[in-house]
Amino acid sequence: MTDWYAVGVGFVVSVIAGVFAFAIPGVGHVGAGLIGGFAAGYVAGGGLGRGFWHGLLAGSVAGVAVALLLGLAGSVFGGLAGGPVGSLFGGAGLFLVAVVVTLLMALDSAVGGAVGGWLKAQ
Image 1 (cartoon, helix red, strand yellow):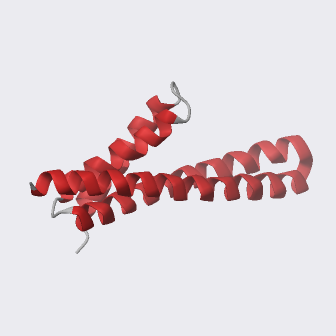
Image 2 (image 1 turned 180 degrees about the horizontal axis):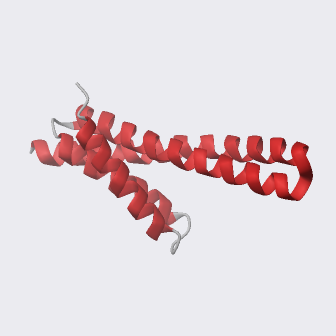
């Protein structure tokens, strides 16, 4: 059974850590995913598998939120720069990049969640 409170905690921690991650590009965003996933896994508890699942969900939800914001921003700025066609291609291109970011955020969050769930089970 999914503990949506744990997923929500992981999501909020991921978003807050992601804001601070802009100070250290690359390493910071991976760290934000790990921290958010760890928080979700630790709150959920139950071992590696349960922590992995909750970290994966928290990272996925955070990644989808980022993807939607990037897609919207790309559509708006693409529309300002290139008319309706620029808006279509700008939003679609950024959305595809954001999907990759979502997958990456989900993977490192899942690893962090597994560690958090394992530590709480000990």
